[in-house]
Image 1: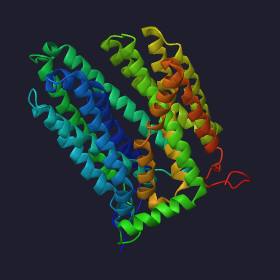
Image 2 (image 1 turned 60 degrees about the vertical axis):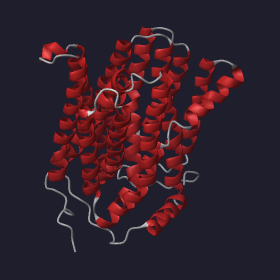
Image 3 (image 1 turned 90 degrees about the vertical axis):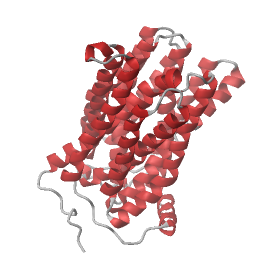
Image 4 (image 1 turned 180 degrees about the vertical axis):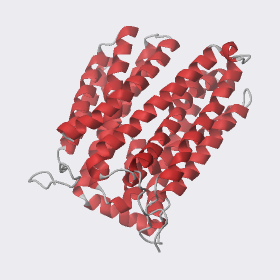
Length: 427
């Protein structure tokens, strides 16, 4: 039986805008909640009675638990969604979980750090699991020949939307009386609610304008997941791409974490860290769009190489960073390539995989993304201990960028129609 959503809508432009708005919607959770307000509010309000090291441990444990849950669930749920034609259903279910959890943060009382972490963990699970299906739905709104621009458009909207709401919420918390709010504590609670409302509102168009893919079969289970694992491992281009992606995304995320950590250790004020985060968002918006067009002009793989080269250079630059001005330069450089590398990686992967199995393949893609930033910090720690120089340890990430680029070279290039180009030594 043919699904009523299997036919492509007459207006691809509407479908692409609706899909892109999901990034505009959910990126606000990352900027305002995950990176911005939650860690500060948790430390100063919910867990104020705990030692700083203890609160940091529990916050890290919650983040890791949510990531681990997504790693386990994403491939299996992706395969299930493909077989039953339910990508939109699962995207909606996890979006609802994230929205409700974010709103509930406003109700958690002072000192209730366990409740705050539980709700935050559920919100993170909703975001990360939902993002897997958001990625998979790109096959419903883009053809291989325009996937660079469509993928970049989604990331660009995410940075812009997340940055705008984060800017509003920063002003809300810093100047609550200007918004007729009594104090910063209440303003922070309002910020959690407005993120939830924003996330929900701008996710809704997807359900109206983006078509669902038809089911490929009615069966789904652990046996089918095992078959998917065998297919991925047997497909050398896909396998090499996933390994390359894991290495360079691991390094990119470690650079991002390092920048904030270095800024804190060098005594930079919190205002500088927030301003740098806003700088990344607003620079990443036009640069992600530019990378989408660059990928069409010089090739997707060549553009990813360019982004990795910039990341390699700024990793070396971070070694010499000493003051706030240099920290802003680092943030600006991250913003120029961060969204572009992410967008083109998603586009490249989309062209390598079977469209009808995008859910399960993107499940693995996002599993690796959540497992990223594991090897990098460990390698940095080993170098720091061996050399006694913490700054020198950051240079080890250049190895990750180089290894990722080398593995990417083992993946067939993509022609203008989106098909693999089989050449000697690339397949």
